[in-house]
Length: 495
Image 1 (spheres, rainbow, N blue to C red):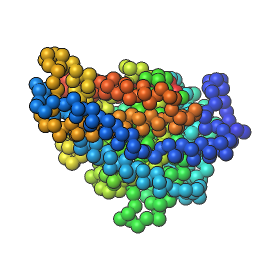
Image 2: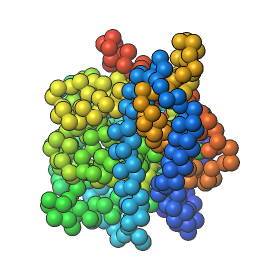
Image 3: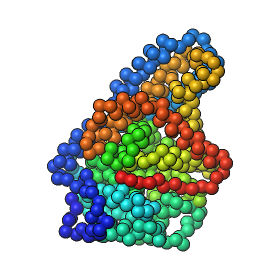
Image 4: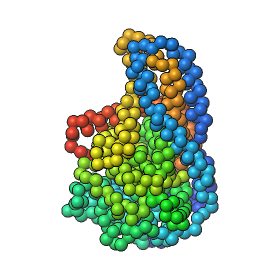
């Protein structure tokens, strides 16, 4: 727990509510055990959804194809590869949660550096405070050699308040100011520039070593239950592993507690993200090579590996984490791993922020997928996933009904009857993603558990969420095709 005798509150800090993490250890331990049982993904929502959909759809499907037959055949079958990969990842995640470390691991001898870059606006301060204090309180018991660096830009709006926040734990927290004149060799900007400055600083300090680890967190992301234990256990295992078996990178699940959401709608919409981590990302990152990319938060990597790869990918890069994943996969195939633990972030607060976030991701992924300097194996899968994302609205039942109305037909049967099973397979996984993701997000929330109406609402709103995701992807595609000026959008953090 934090040492209250060393706190230095400013009037701004005194106005903030207490953190959910600041509670007796016995209560927290009980919550950790209860939450763990809810994080392990389950098969039955997928199986039940598939059986219902295949029976209902098969009953109403005509034996001959209509005007929409071939387009729907292609669109409905397209996501099948991702669905198969995700089911493999789901199985891996279940095994990892089942076999996760039991008990409390001893303090880890390795040095851990937590890096939190922030835009330094005043609207992000409450979320940044939650992130910093969560990392300090959770990691301090397991890492005697622990430091947290908050990266700010020279002259940022909230520099004074951020320094006051760091002062309460000045023995482990420091504020690192990135000089306005700092330039990377390739001219990287935005978050990539901040990460590169941090990597350069560690190299200058002589800390770019094999036994030093860097944990990247966002300024709205804190550590979830038992995350610190899993990080310590993972690093300890790598120290004991033989060189060919050692892993150099690990990442877990990004979740969204209910209390961190400014909007119920977008909290439900982001149910899909923890499920994607427990499925598709579990398959790739847990399989050793993160071809699906990485998240910029809860990213654990050896300092020596980070120093070798770096973050300097050029001035127009919007998804530096995905670029890092591709370069890591090229340099260290088979050396990544997936952690059965979670961090806790915040979903977008408004529809505008939701679209801007998805637009930036789609724009950045398209840049990466068409970058010939990146290995074609990674780009091929990213391009496939991007096309699945952009065509999502056209797989939507609402779009199909609109197409029927436009063409004055009621027959949307596919070219082959067997496609009904494939479509049911893909849609069942899509339902599973929102159903299980909601369960996980509710489990890590302070109140715990889903409200009775939330599973009904999240399934009923899947067509709406699909349209929202697709519109964001199409906006990113448009920005990319028109060669708009590259802008890294940092959405508002209200939690």
